[in-house]
Length: 298
Image 1: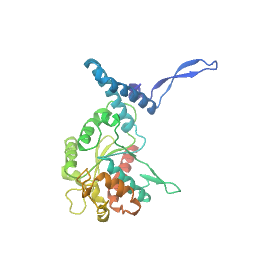
Image 2: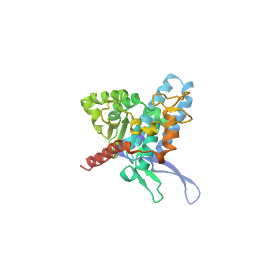
Image 3: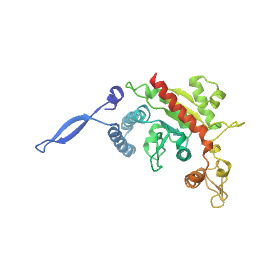
Image 4: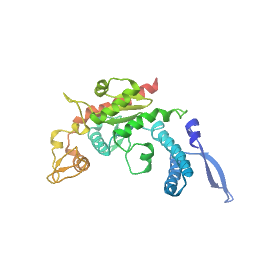
């Protein structure tokens, strides 16, 4: 089924249905991506449950099935995506961007829409990190190391698909800091582009429908992180007498972490936060989508 999907763009599933006499008949009917995802995920779950008690030869069979599952996930999530996909380094980045978009919605009709009651609906898919095996199989659990592996395998995986696809852009978002340099160096090995040129660019078209955006450098900045887009008063908010320390993932006696900042400050105080500093970043995301759609029409 997966092979036919990758090469023909569709597949058939065996479905049992009752006839007029109440007997069950087996028919082959067109399947959906969600149906195949469910089947492959179920098989993968059984394999992972049994892997510890199987022989090495059986384990190699499981790895083979896992490869098919990974290929399917690449197809479903990125090759045949139904809306632009945004992949950030960590989950807190999504909290920042989602709340900024809701506050600035009228400026970004390609990224978010508001109904008559002012409720927002995002027009981009945020690739959320979870504890599920899906993120492990795709090799995207958060962090620049995973991004490098993802970039290196992206083109290779897509070469296996021979049906029309890549209608929507897949956008990687990184901090423009020392960690981000590792991703830039990876892309430089692919495109041969100058490092400093990439760091200042609004976005980089890596290959196929894959793009990279880094946090903007403002003024004389040599490095930047997404938290730099908040104004001073937001970064200085105290929670239970503690100050925000973006460099520490843990809560201490005097500081709180990014997770607390995202939940207790950005999410809970969004209505009073000035998100204007996020506009240069959101402009870049919107520009990638516009550019990709324009190329698609050519």
